[in-house]
Image 1 (tube, helix red, strand yellow):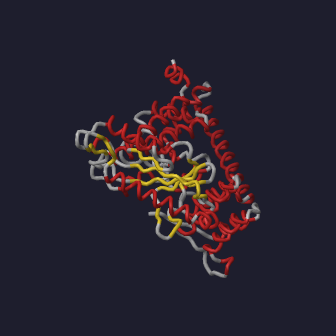
Image 2 (cartoon, rainbow, N blue to C red; image 1 turned 45 degrees about the horizontal axis):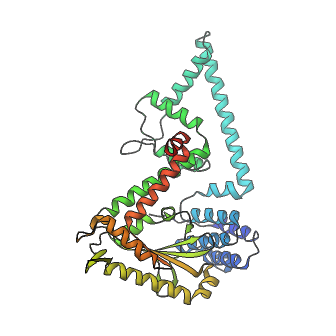
Image 3 (cartoon, rainbow, N blue to C red; image 1 turned 60 degrees about the horizontal axis):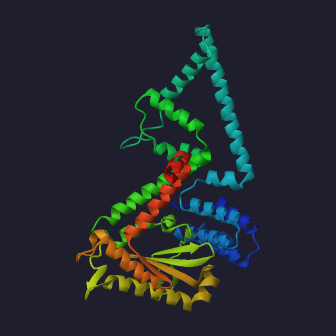
Length: 405
């Protein structure tokens, strides 16, 4: 269950951030945030919940349209805090100089305390064993480290579950709790030592990229499992594609939080292209037996695909007709909007229609369409898998050379 947050500190930060921009539309959206929160507009409390998260995300998206990436990142962090994903201490370390100084002072004292305890341990070692070497000292400290309670073991196959106090600290260093949660349970002291050495030597930037690749692989595997389940609903597929805009290709910079831009139109997945225009993804079930049919010896799309395309056409028409209002109210340009319909999978298609038949039929259909493309979940999964393979090869130069050889 999401634990929404708000409060005086966030309200102050939003107010200070308002002074960092002069764009009227960005200012309007910041005012909307303050309106949700309350006190600056005569309220008695600090509003929170999904309306506040959405309002903060709207500011971030509007800032992106003007190329103000620093302000966009600031409001993305505000939104993460309001949505329960970041702790207040993290925001303070970013945007409250006094709080950051207090945190730094605390860390300095902690380091000093640790150094003092280390000296005491070495004094004891030298007293008990005057012939002790550097190797003896190293082994002693390693033994101390291995004997410390690992903050509680997680369930399942292993991993380390961290309490809230430790997660707050680790979030300051690039969400390192993800690394710890995904580690195998140390089966021996040697395994624990190797894990410690790995974390000590790992480049932070490379580690972040590897974590991102791992998260994407997990997301793709989860989507594939739902696609291959013949009973999966559209809502189940949508849940697995939520915030996974990378699966649709590199042309899209973000999935928009707002799904409704007119009274009678609710979009499945609205994507933002780099030029600020909208791309609509319409999701249908994967289990469609008559995705492609054969009539009089010719292959053609079946009724479910035509219905989905008609639905996408109506969305685009509505967006065209309301372009000015949508651009003014939400900062999204729908005049050049396009759409992708994701429907069906060859494994479920009947009537003796082969995957090759489906691919050729869709290529023929798409060649005559201007703004709407129809693809299967198989095509979507294969394309995403190729992108992951390419990204993995870039992380491993030796593998890349073998691939291109």
